[in-house]
Length: 473
Image (cartoon, rainbow, N blue to C red; front, side, top):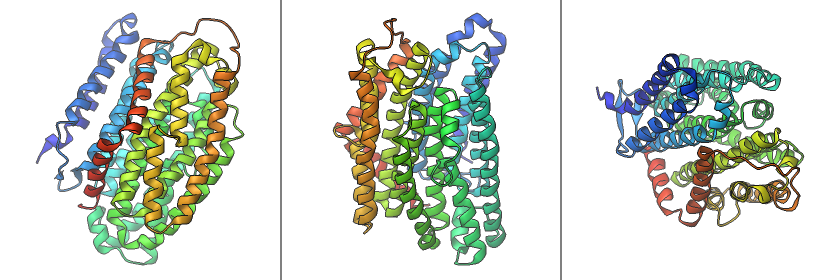
């Protein structure tokens, strides 16, 4: 048994346990930043180690856990997202009255859950990884104990998330009852058009749609994003969404490929409604976190378009877009954290005059928003071009055009924030404070977004290799 295939997950869990231990043993004044630096350093080492791993495919535990290029690139995404989130969350953690070590450890446990999910090749392991991630996020969303909104968001997420998990597990039980197996490859062998399989497929898709936050399973996202600590809202936008999307791809294209006609009809309808409603509702938001929440819903709709392509180019476009979306969200939320610290709220009007007080943060936010809007030369333009091209090449011209139209409409509400930053006067003249770790995270997101947009070739090649490996299982 090649236990080394689990080495990155083991390293992340050991790092989390080390942080908890040091938090108990070290004096409190020594842990204010040291635990954060330890977490960032440890994750950097794990990320560097993953680049020494081969894309496989290789399996362990009787084929229940796989290391292939598809799993590897998503694990690297999650590591980068968590690493950057920890960097720009140092200010937030430093202001906590306690539980600093627990914050970093919980983030690492959520990361471990995501990494397990994308390597799982059976329904039970997928569910275990999903619940490790989700239960950890229940705690993190309500982590701001002195905030009523955070407590309310945590409770809402717990109730709705538990219901979605129950729906997902119920669908898995139907599939297991009919096929007699939880392994994806064996399910594909027994899958046919029967009521039991269709019911199981429907419930599984519904549960995963909730995790991705697409309409009509989006009701939790705006309230949770607004109430959750800003770093956690950022991780929900990228980590949870990308992990659930990766699991959906593996389930649909491995276990249920024989039922493609049925799930494609569902995905096309949901993608259409999600793009339209997410884009239109985002226009009316005055809170930046709620605006990003609805924008994130619309972005999920774009990613679902890649599923409609049902080929390597479609999967490649989803992987490519997921990577660039991480950097855009990290950039946006790092600025939101800084504005919250200096001005006390998350309203769009509080970004007034940001370009005068912090040109760097204004530039980072502008690039991040324009990338999500799909404006060249940002990375988002290339990502959306890949998605729309893949969809249109497979004959879904209407869906491709609709995605393009919604993307152009989204420019309006993104530019509202840019206008406020550059054309309005600052609300006060106090010095705008930025911590060095937050500055580093913001600069990395800025440079990565521009670099991928100008030179997308290497990432596109990696995404193509990862997409091909999905069809080998």
